[in-house]
Length: 120
Image 1 (cartoon, rainbow, N blue to C red):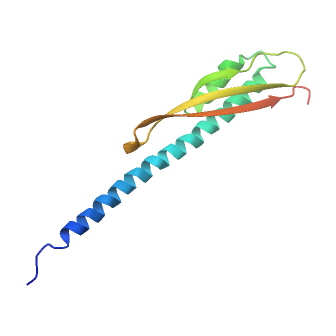
Image 2 (cartoon, rainbow, N blue to C red; image 1 turned 60 degrees about the vertical axis):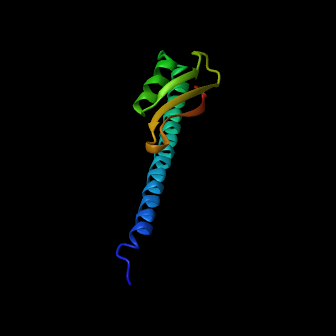
Image 3 (cartoon, one colour; image 1 turned 120 degrees about the horizontal axis):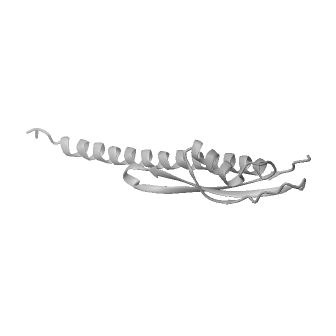
C-alpha cells in the first residue's frame, strides 16, 4: 500500500532549510560588501584629508565629503591643518549602516590613515 504525500514533509524541510541558508548567506554578503565599502570610504577620506592639511581646505570637511560620496559617515578625523612643509599623518574613522536582512541592522566601522609629504 502506497502512502500518498509521504515525501512531502522531507522535501518541505529541505526547502525550508535551503531558504534559511540563502537568507543568512545574503545577510552575510551584505555585511561583507558594506565592510569593503566602508574601508573604501575611509581610505578616500584619509587621502583627501592628508592633502587638505597643507592647503587652505578644511581637512575635516574634505574627509566628511569624501566619506559621504562613498556612502559612509565620518566619525572622527585626526587631521589638524599644518601649513608647514613637514611630513604629516592623518587618521580617520568612518561608519556605514547596513541592513543585513535576517541578521538585522548593523553599523560597520572602518579606519584608515594616510601620510602626506608636501615637499616630496
